[in-house]
Length: 280
Image 1: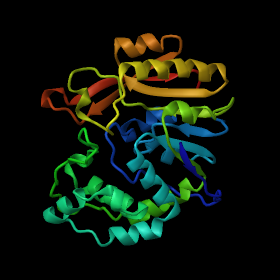
Image 2: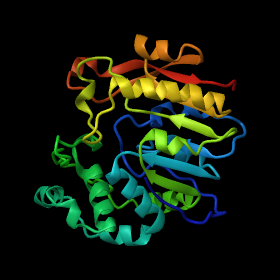
Image 3: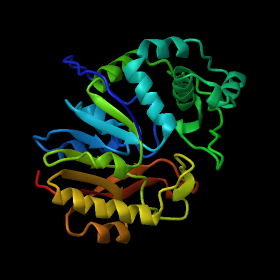
Image 4: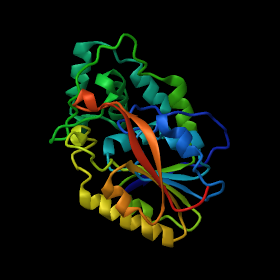
């Protein structure tokens, strides 16, 4: 488990996600925000993804994490080296041949800033902003040919960097990160969703998949965090499996639009659940 820390900043900044991410929570923000506890100590989000809720509430102290080392590196660079990142991005081009030359790069030969710039660039210029890798961990999404993708994002990156000054960033699994959670802390869990159908594996975040037994481990940890006195909120798909594993807690049904599915007929509005172990 790797971690880096920076001093806190007193500056108040309105920040938004700097990455598009499959499973992002921007469309559910209103539902999530109204469930955030009025008072809490440290905010934890071990499946950070695009960080929509994190940036929306801008916690005074936070711990965020993800198993995806490419994603975690981007957060660290945005926090610690935003100017260098913007300088690197300014040299990129919205051209097909250039895109595939960047996509084919060997990440082991890149600096942390080059690696972060590569991810942000590919994220904004690839098809649908979809992060997907093959079984070898190689990014394999095609060029989208958008007319004017904003892959530099100066204001957004600088604003995100300010919020991240208050945050410890880990590359680790959820169980290791949440060992540190204490009574009074607020934890938001947004794992890769339990599959509703055979197409749900279409979005592959990294080489490791989040399987049924991982969801069962997460449900067990939810109960342990409750016993520890933590405020815990979880998002997941609306299935008999998820409802059964969280039936002891408040389970609310919400509606979201599914934008990514191999079967076009299964895109559209679907039900999801939000689970809380506290009143709001």
